[in-house]
Amino acid sequence: MLHRFGRRPTFGAGFVSRRQVAIGLAAMGLAPLGGLRIPTARAASLTAADVKNAKGPLNILGSQPYETRPSWPSELNISWAYNTTNEEILTKTTQPGTFDMVIIYQGEIDQLRKLDRIEPIDTGLLENWNKVAPLFRDSDVIRRDGKVFAVPFHWGHGYVEYNADEVQPPKSYDDLLSPKLTKKIGLPDDPYAVITTFAFFAGAEKPNNLSRAEFDKTIKLLKSFRPQVLTIHNYGDEVALFARKDIWVGFPEYSDSLMQSRKAGATNVQATMLAAWSYVDCFMVLKAAEHPAAAYKFIDIALGTESQKLTTQHSMAFPVNDEAIPAIAKELQYSSSADVLKKAPLVPGVTVEEGGRDVPFQEWVQAWEEFKAS
Image (cartoon, rainbow, N blue to C red):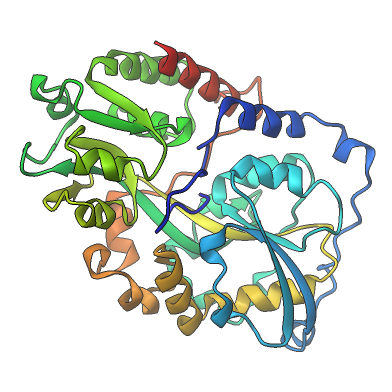
């Protein structure tokens, strides 16, 4: 999920305007790269020695908070470009050779595979692969057809944020329907996050992979919730809304929203894991990578404990290496990632394929626009 931590973001997994979504979906509908040819994968013949001895240029496309220069291998000459929406990954990787690797949440695997942009990862070339916590390392959300397409880097989970001076901690969906909360709830302008959360409320077994019946039930529940909602806001705007007491509850919120709201004056905001779920931001290597050995070297170093501590402190995202947990802000610390993931399971991402069992993301966006306009 494009990073949302520590600064007002304009991005995220599905956190996009109608225009941005249209651009991304148009990119997915192009003929193979608009007639451009993707070179064959160049990482297939790499050896451990190639990775260890890699030096020189490396071109990365990722979000700004992950740009943690003190963690970078000194032998690499790294060029870092920013993406501000998930769908921007699709358009900015159109020209082969522009980037070697991208950092994006796991749900973009299907979109990038559909465009034949990414290749499987040879985890045997990563000395620090076993530093990744098992629930991330072994998860199906980073795999397709039994192959690893994404290397976990950082992760996060959503939570229900509430003002404890005004309301008791919401423990169920019914608690959110309290008349006291009418026009006192904020939702982020994010179809991916909000619809996934309401799919949990609707009892979907796999809230990212909704059948037509499950999707219709979820959207019906979401629409029935509209009277409770004061505003649909950009991520980061909830801080001022809580500080002014315009809203008493906001969900799903992420990472340091809690701390930022307290700093802004909402000193008794708290969080509950009601309908919580997690995502993981990952490294993906492009088939058209000009410098695959350097990409693997960067990924391997980034999984090490000291690098994970540095990127955790800078980004305020959670580390996938549990040895770096002490670097997390104390308000957000946990004993192990496994403990949190039991309460906030990883979800794979929404399909973009039409005609199958699952409702594609295109329809999620359409339903969200209709909800906002209601």
